Length: 204
Image (cartoon, rainbow, N blue to C red):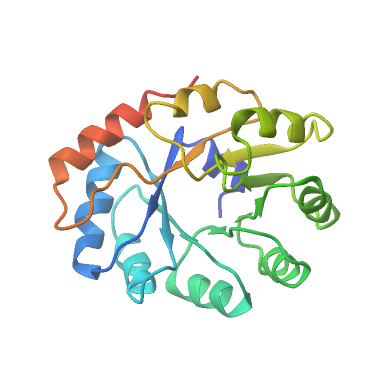
């Protein structure tokens, strides 16, 4: 199993995916991987999410994780579905302890110093900064990162193709999460692959 830092360094953008139809899973994953984005975060925001994770795991080259994991039940279900990493919008002691004990690469959300300190107590050094724009944007992350020099981030929430490069230029940022890559509806593989190719060139 790859460490979370290796996963975060695989590509500059992690697509944040909300997929209602499991039949769309393979075409979307195939197009994103073809465009150079191998790390895929499938959010647990739809009833289809676990089936989507299972389907995407069959796509060669894809590294498939579960996002919006908020409790132990979601953690266990995601791991059972084959999730290779776990992303949470926040961090609680119970979820953090369960995730660390599971051994699965874990990227918990944080927007303040207290959350970072809780994560550090659990032995975690990699965090999702969420919601990135609503939490004050890059100036807020710069201020938050200053006392925690050992910590690395994946900002997510409100970041666009136009702004991602600015975030990626900040050294503690290893990647960003992006929801702009896949439009709703029937997947257009060519359009998704083209968007992925553009995102894959954003590394600072």
